[in-house]
Length: 404
Length: 157
Image 1 (tube, rainbow over the protein chains, first blue to last red):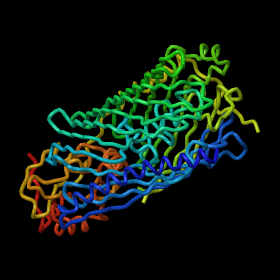
Image 2 (cartoon, each protein chain N blue to C red):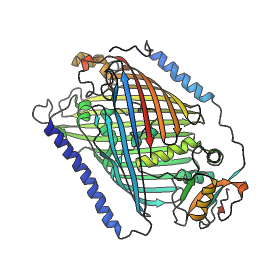
Image 3 (cartoon, rainbow over the protein chains, first blue to last red):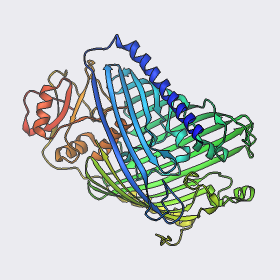
């Protein structure tokens, strides 16, 4: 156990090291061209949440008496611009979320941004390093409370077991933005190595394994469009993930790989008092040579949300959020028959109501009630015994966030 | 310790869809935002910025921090008043055609993903004028009636 933990830390350290090395090389090669004006800025945020639930655990032992305070986020970010064409941006993040994130500081992102085209209505550039995956509307800022549409993100699409795969990748990205008479277009292309770990194993291989994923790569494309008046925003993301798995002694699997296709459709409508947001995601997974049957599954998820701004300070939201892990087994009955585990592990329908109060630009206070039918997005780490989980459960969350 | 259910009975699939439909109806019924009244607002730059005509598309792009460089290659330095300042609200709605919360979301997305920056926020109109007069490549806004000196008025086509 301890050895595994150390190995994991080391792996993580290696990843960070690669990113640092890459950036240092880049800095060296560009330092000759550096001009007089060096610009920089530093900022950050922190948040503390409290969760209580009648059954099942979310972000710590929320169903125990007293609830759970194990939901904390602290981020420090900044940039340095050394040259009109080069900027380095980074963020350190400490996130505590029950048994899923332990609060160890991580490099959330750290990349060099090279500006290729800088015109008034057209910009293009290249990013190198650890880059947040340009997935849907919210992944790139998923841990910053102010930017989330609710206290927690819609769990159907942004749930913690896929967090590792969605979060970021070490590699390169190209972006292109153009404004024209139709509106505003933005294209993001990304290729890089993903961070995989126990959560990915638990979701896609059924359990935490002794072996591990090898070099897992992702290719992603996202197109976003805002028509002229900026009342609407729309986006389409498509990502292909390639995860080779090397089993170790004791694993009930053979050497093989996972092919994952993620598609996310995003839509938002903004009015003065009202906003309407909807996203849908489909994840097609193929297990190749791993010895897992059936060898193909399709996850489907969507949510619909409405926000209402009573005043500048007070805001309310209502959301319906729906996840099925296997579209051919929506009620989980086949899963139950094959594995003998509760059918509700295969779906989750979540109604939530939230209230938001922003007394100033730096403070954000929220409360949110969830009524959930199903347990598909609950973490197996916070709920180790699936047979003890309850299908219908309720949850109340409160959070205070501060930015600086 | 057992807790009372917050809401007792789960709704069926039908209920779900009815509620979604209701959301859509409410969304489509809300009327467009009213045009805010008050003194007219003008956009100004530092005098070192060559005269440019800026359409509202271009202004949205500049104040949304997407355009970062003037046509002559000089960096654009954007100044804004606080989100709740009446002049910022009017500028945002009537000049850019955006609600202040939309601008804030655009800036936050850029800052916290590392892909962009937020504009520099000034405390009041006096500081806005001083910054516009003294910062190279600066752009900002002031009431037209104040007829500020030492800055260039931006023409809108």
